[in-house]
Figure 1 (cartoon, one colour):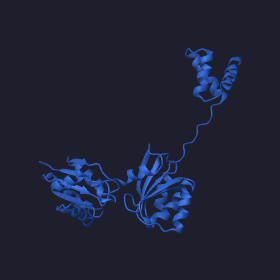
Figure 2: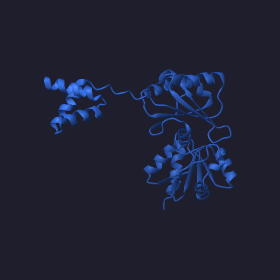
Figure 3: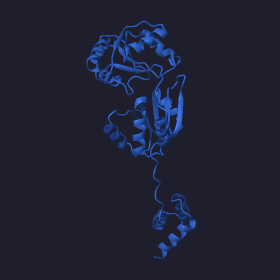
Length: 279
């Protein structure tokens, strides 16, 4: 009987955020696949759990992925953890999930800490629609190409960034999106020195030019403003009135409805309808 793969989220800073279900899953798993076994061992020691650890990270995923899948197919249960947050999100665990899906292995994701959602929820930016863009490239050309592709993105954008790359990223964002674009810089989430700076890209460049950044950042950038639709013309109003009259409305009701739907003054719509009638 085949085993299962559990995706177990780990604290992004505060060890108290580990849930009872995550702890139980780690205790009951046959083995744990970890991005960095040294980091995961500290967590397991904190929880008082002794378990077999298998290293699974970006540079060995091609060889270790199939080994893990074979063990699961043989009946073992694997718990996958990243260094912090939810596995498979901007993380090599994505490839292991794909391998398991191809092999018909059940994958169970346990809810828990995730820096993307944590930052978005406290950013003060629009949360109704958003896109997660992960880490930008360290190469300036690739980074600019990535940002250029997002120039007209209307949804809120979320990025991960390391402190040593932050200033270059902010400078490129200000160049592409404009210095007045709002941004929330969420630093050291759930940790002792958690901070949220709500500002503009231009002001953020000035701030971190003077004060070198420290800690891991999640950048929440406002989307491009929606372009306002051009106002309806008198010709539009006249055609709208004519269509409504043809549909059975009285001239008075057609004018009233047109004014409401096209956001035009009634007098403007009346004059447009009168001109149409005279023509």
